Amino acid sequence: TFPCPPPPDTVLIDKARAIIDMVLNKGTFACLTMKTLLCELDQCLSSELGLN
Image (cartoon, rainbow, N blue to C red; front, side):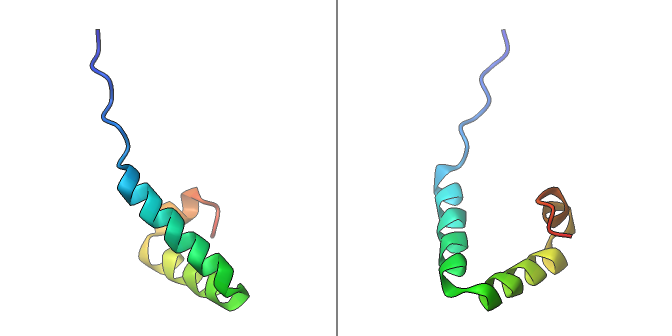
């Protein structure tokens, strides 16, 4: 049998979720700023998320 995959890093997932929630609560300008920065800093992730 194959070993089970490692559990996801729940702390990292919770931190990412908290940042996204914080930005969403700050409004449209903050969301657009985060989207722009994410597209510049991580083109692969932003493409996978459909932000391009």
